[in-house]
Amino acid sequence: MFSVTEKATQKRAKLHNKRLVLRVIYDQGPMSRADIARATHLARTTVSNVVSLLITEGLIEEVGQQALERGKPATLIHVVNDARHLIGIDLGGRSLSGTISNLRGEIIHRKSISLAGLRGEAALQKIYQLIDALKAETNRPLLGIGIGVPGLVDAKRGCVRQSARLDWWDFPLRQRVEQHYNLPVSIANDSHVAAFGEYTFGNGRDVSNLIVITVGMGVSAGVVLNGRLYFGDSFGAGEIGHVTVVRGAEAKACPCGNRGCLETVVSERALIAQAQAIARSDPNSPLHQFISSNDALIDIDSVQKAIAAGDVTLLHTVRQMGKRLGYAIATTAGILNIERVIISGSMAILGEPLLRSMREELNQCLHPMLASQTHIQLSHLGQDIVMKGAIAMVLAAEMELV
Image (cartoon, rainbow, N blue to C red; front, side, top):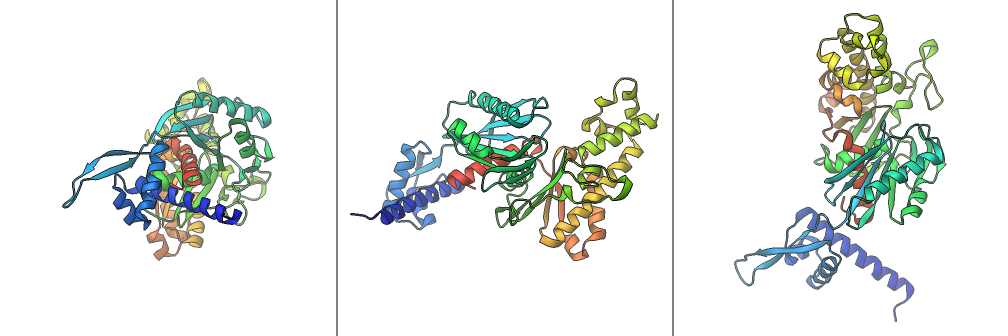
């Protein structure tokens, strides 16, 4: 008879072997059972048993044979990408956005709904509405739900400590969603999630360390160290948007409760406010046309087009914002010495004018040798970055595939 401890140890060993075999096939397949045994250093009988189990669960399948120099051809195995689907949710944009993806992070269906200014419990019900709509679009088993949340998030506890936009304070989001859907749920701050998305599916796939600066409605950073998300000693790593950079009478109130935070002068909201002021005061600005109709129609896309059309004042504004971001990056890179910095969020649409001033400021503020090794580039995941990261978090938590 096995003791309770021995049974628990055997169960953990079986789960470890199962995840190890699946990860190797996911990364290196198609491959034979013998290849798997060599890659995992597991006994061939163990590999054979695990492969049989994974085939039964529909996670892998045999896909043909490979001729060998001697003996019978080897049967090749690969992961069935659509064996499980995942839901990724982004709560940080203008609307609530979600996707259904397969095990490779390939988006199968997407859906966005307006939050309509709802907060608190009403906002959660709106999120349920989005998840219900996504669930209706798949007939595959769901592996789990990943959610990126604006604000301070304790990812380990699954608790939103503070989200001013959603009016959540010490809100047990993971528990509520898990109870509602009976599915595993992973949550984290949306910038942390974005960093993991970039690391898994974007421009960070070839590095172990990465900084992603998200510049949209706010400003924040996500950090990956040695292939793992870095949350800090508690949960607040990367909150660079709420560092005070303006003092005195010019310091504007920030939703966090302080004044003069970085995101009050560098964010989509700050840029639109300045663009509206330029449109009203400068008849030569391409944005001046909106004054006769409604300057509320000015958005990040119209700002980008105005810069491309030669709006000098607006270009100067963007460069000043780039300098502030460049200083923030220099400080962060100087502390962590991470060489890959990626810019995401709605402001990334501004492209080279923003990047150029960021790089110039970085070169002025950071040790020359470190500055020469620090590379700033734009994300290519666009508006999907948080949803991709949310999916990656579920893959890591439930299958250790990341």
